[in-house]
Length: 380
Figure 1: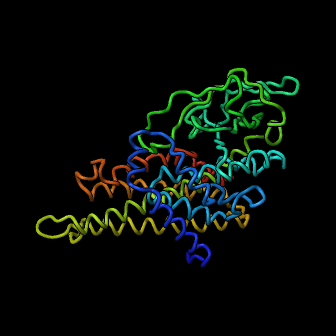
Figure 2 (figure 1 turned 135 degrees about the vertical axis):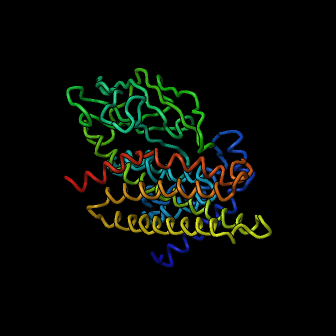
Figure 3 (figure 1 turned 180 degrees about the horizontal axis):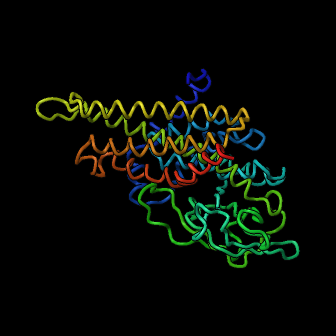
């Protein structure tokens, strides 16, 4: 896709910020401590990145899905971890509120999210309800002007430092599967809310993940989000956007791997010449760039189609995530292979890219879930 002048300017802005601000010192600090970098969060907020896709009336920049994709890709090209800092607010965080929140809810929650003043996370997954979200066991029982929530959410990215969470709970025990689920905006400081230990993850270190535990938590009815018993459909719409974000993140990781591999192949000498001169290496590079460009066309076009209201939007988002994330892992594998033993050493960027790449085929729905979505749209 040939980008418009406006989108090309955005790409340059995102790339300049990432290359200037995502320093090696910060990346090493994230890896060493695993803690959220609040200073980077504030810098992203000051530049408007936390609201790239959020409407102007709620404090955002009012950008389209292509602008969002370009931002995530360029940030992930330098650091997949830091790409999440800007991704969450524009995707799974504000998404459910923008889909079906009241004007009052949007003003109260989305505006401070876009400005970086508050952080809101998405809490759907449970210990026994991952790909099968219809198996949700968290309950919300009506009690006067409140709902009482009990349950446990797991693998919630950003939970340890979040101000709010969009929580999915079963409000009608008589309905089975995905029916009878509702959404609630959970204030993480309410009595009865706690978080579990930080998960010791393979990758994406520097964006803490934990469980959210709710024990008799009283949530006011004003924080019921969307229609009662109909939260599942909004979750699926939100995940469409999340999948597009993961596809963009996958593009960025793969591009970073390619650039590191080209640089290394030119510098590294064996048998008296650069390894780039060996067909085995050059052919791997050729395969890597071809797959990246194919994925990029799919992802960019999906972003445009999504904003145009295409009826194939959900299928295209699933296709983008499936292809881009699997491509990303193949490219990361080849990047380590080109680096040889050095690719296994933490001082080299491809080692980190390789670990970070692995999550892309898992979160926002595994590759197998994407295949279910795609095949289901074909066969219905």
